[in-house]
Image (cartoon, rainbow, N blue to C red; front, side):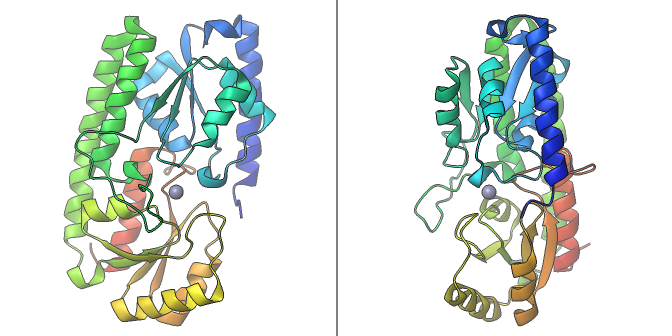
Length: 305
Ligand SMILES: [Zn+2]
């Protein structure tokens, strides 16, 4: 269920308007409008990180609209045109947004594609039950800072004249992220240890859990778009009861009906409207905003302060 359907329409219209503006400003081959870099990110989360570093020097747009699901995204012809006009494309990699490869090929784009999430020094990658590396690396704020370094390097390579601006923006933003990282760690450390056992709707929280001291004992779906069988739901309910799970993390971009049904069977609470793969409306319209919001919701549900 996409509860942000009007927002999606708005985002598509915005993209269309931007394309018209870009075409009016000059040939798309220059890859810029009004002297700014035309940049595409696969999700609103990465678009925000790019925007924090690029400031007024970039026009950045997300292919997956706010509230959309990156895992099951189906690009449209509008997306192909947006990609063909862009100079730089940012994706996560690790299987999250592999559809970008075909999109770039369909667009005949020669733009640089920057993969943010893979091969980062100092990241402890986590393998999911499927045997694949879990892609939700940015949910650890210290790891998101490594995305910022990669964004800064890519923007600087594309626009060396503004390198000092990108460096200053990245330094200031990473200071905010360091404060946020400390704040989340401190607040979750105050949650009683026995309460820090959770289940999430999809497998988006292992890096958050590892960084901030939670244990994720299961997920409701194996992957977005794959509904669990009755048997899988029964197994999960048994696991929740056996491991004393306090909370089920439900996410803004997915319907929380199944989470509520499972919670009613087990006595766990549902922490609804958490944000991971997408931003939302203010104050959940930035990466710092969603991580702060998530922490407030999680700490309240688990009995911290
Ligand atoms: Zn995800």
